[in-house]
Length: 440
Image (spheres, rainbow, N blue to C red):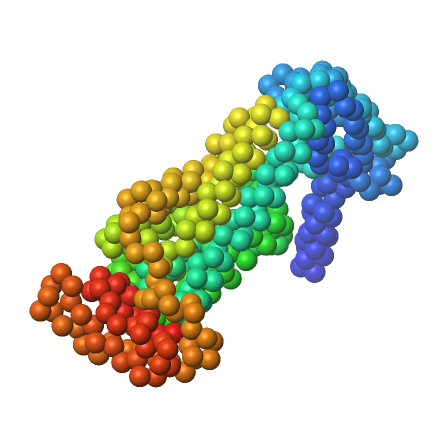
């Protein structure tokens, strides 16, 4: 009995050792990406990791990941075979770019019984037409990054100066925060989490993770700025404005679904990568619909007051530059599939520009003859700072005998004598629009 048990333990030990040594050696490259322009040359090295344990020879075929193994963007185009041995465990390959486009160079062990792992033996090659297009893509990329980042602040500054969010739709604020918080989670997961990155590489072999550090910074900043906007909606005067039932249901369902999926991931039912992509899909939906409440709100009021047009100027500038960057990159690398391959970014840019055009029409065409200021009187600008702090003008009564020109009784006793004449009768239209901002 004891002999059988000892034999069993010995077999387990041998099996464990064999499994552990399944991939004693592995093939790898010294770089994963090569980016050059037509006419330029570059090189990479293919080598064996743990070469000291290499006590046999094996053949490796090096070529491009295509049906015939031929490369289309550089020479040599044909695949080649090299032999690794204990004496030769590192090879250098030179490439010269000939045509704009992209290729993936892969190395494959000819015999599959050598226990050499070749899954990491690849190089992504991108060949551009001219460095000019790369520079233009970089410039417009930074422009849209900076402009889109700054576009959140004009509305916050306007709310702060007015101490009011009257005219600003609360649904838009809540949807914006939800979208950018979800976008931050998605970017953080793919950029920082090794577990999520491993799942992504398993799902998309030899693909580059499509998240850069500036994407993470942009998402964090956007979430922070939109959170300030939402806080302003509950701190400052908002009149009769409330968040709609549809907006409450939408945000509630998205956050509840996120919580349920988090539990499913913890219990192993759902993949963490799938969980991350849920946040990106919600962000895409939010960006597609978040402007609708504000556009409809402007339509009902026949006014855009309280809605910062400077935010729209920045938003459309960022959207146009984002589209230009994608077009420059697609043309430079002769890869028009990248536009629709990154459909989220393309769709976000197109949706933003479309809504921005609508807001411009509302501001300068449809409701151009609206009241020119949210302040009740032009004279307010001439009041001294100290007077503004200690003086308060309040509505006492509205007489409606004359429906065309109803009058407002105003208590202006706190003002100095030379200012009393500045406040008298205000049109009912102004009262209806600005009755919540008569403090200065």
